[in-house]
Length: 126
Image (cartoon, rainbow, N blue to C red; front, top):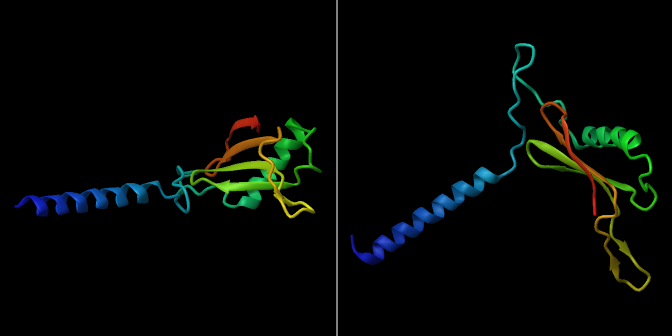
């Protein structure tokens, strides 16, 4: 094989490997959960709505001083095997037309496993 053809083949292999690696990083639709009661496992937390409900229950007990007025929105991000849920303030358009974006704010953030609803990585955002 001549050198230019080897270079093209090597490039094609590198691109194919990158595509396979990237698709492996894609977020799956549903995690593979262990069996329960002798039946195939199904996720316990299947929707963002359920994840937000769990978050609100934990927040009420663990962080009752949450600033619900300044940070009214609750986001549940699907991360494949788990949900990341947090309270935040949506961007605000000021009278000048500028957009104000708030990051952090000391509000509760946590992760909820889809398969068994395990709560982890609980902290206050900064």
